[in-house]
Image (tube, rainbow, N blue to C red; front, side, top):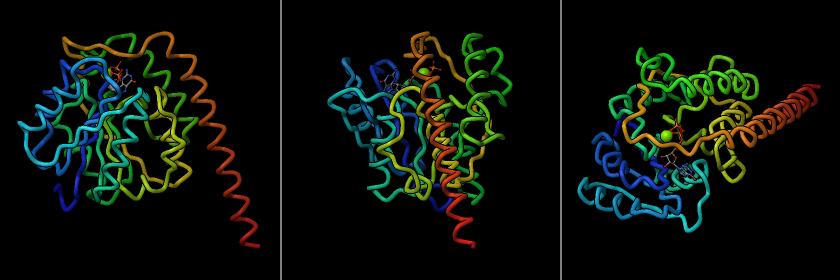
Length: 253
Ligand SMILES: Nc1nc2c(ncn2[C@@H]2O[C@H](COP(=O)(O)OP(=O)(O)OP(=O)(O)O)[C@@H](O)[C@H]2O)c(=O)[nH]1
Ligand SMILES: [Mg+2]
């Protein structure tokens, strides 16, 4: 429990056998349920997560996808499990150990205070960003964050690619999880959908971590599909919001 909230932590993991054990072990003790989603890894991610789960004790689920679905697909599986098990809030802390567990209370606080439905990390508001984040990532994140302000409609939100998030179940229930983009571009797409649902989104500073074992599935080939997802999310959001406004005007007549 954290401030009267039942909290789940969803950990998406794809070929993370080196990092997943520590990621599971360091989830704060106040978390009620840890949900590891192994996205059809070809290494020992699931077995390592299971061993860490047993060592940790408490409620830890290790869910294994038979086929790879992408990071968004893995998170959606975790969200469904969190909803099914009655959690109030689902946080996401990736299986690659890039999230500092000490930041979790700050990520949950705006929801516990009743100010937010979705909270995300903003690594650019942490003093370490310029030394910890590789320059290519800084450039990519700035470009995508600027584009996502426009496509999502959340003009106050920055660091769109930060995966450290928490969402209240009322916001999860307001979006169609089946329809959310399942690969890179997932956080950008989710933000657009949350805007249509009227969710309150708050950014909080979190520590950027790019440790010695850092590896990433992001490369130049990721850019074209990501641009397409952004355009799609933008178009879908505008179409839905225009339809909703027309309905409201018609109802007021
Ligand atoms: N690459 C990749 N990661 C996945 C997939 N499914 C789940 N994940 C997990 O999603 C998390 C984020 O993936 P990363 O490729 O590191 O992306 P990122 O952390 O947003 O980006 P970086 O800042 O470059 O590390 C990791 O914990 C992965 O193990 C998948 O299909 N591909
Ligand atoms: Mg990563």
